[in-house]
Figure 1: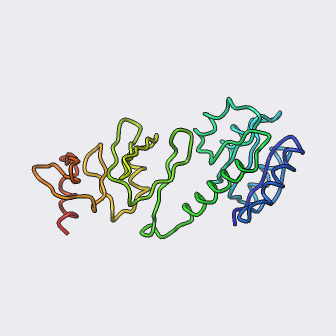
Figure 2 (figure 1 turned 120 degrees about the vertical axis):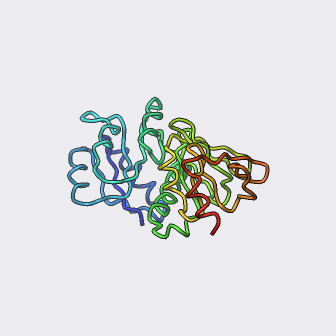
Figure 3 (figure 1 turned 180 degrees about the vertical axis):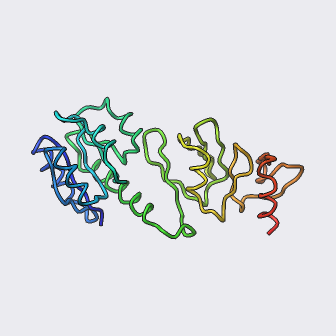
Length: 230
């Protein structure tokens, strides 16, 4: 069960959130607040999985409020103003709901939160079947088994999958590698991460993933062959 609180300076908006939360069976809305300060006091005592957070409030914006939260709570922003969407996703929001909130959009946002909640609470890394990346202001779910290879470009990665789809996300190669099952993926170049099961051959410091050629960097060569020969 996902524990949640809602923060909005409009009591009617909080009533709407309460009713919407009653439509899903995996979110427990523990409390609602019209005063952000009171909500912050509550969070210091009671860690909470998910925040429904209004953006435009008199005392503090929801964006600034979330920046001060000292725990890894998920957040779904709620607002009547669409211009805050970009900044909200830069804070890794699960979703961004425009008021009045349509039931189907609420359900979509709730399902995203539920999937991500299950993901971050999956302690058995070897059984990890998916990764989640923030791309184009959405939380994208990528099956690990579908990843062909990953290319790093500056502060971004491009994840290429079997369906010929490419997902780009602003994330470092190191953080990207940490998201993946350790025994299944390896970094072979400063710009490439590959899955072992896709390797068909290795010749002259070139790794072949069927028709795809991946360079093997000098820094990564010794570690690669140490593992690959096993």
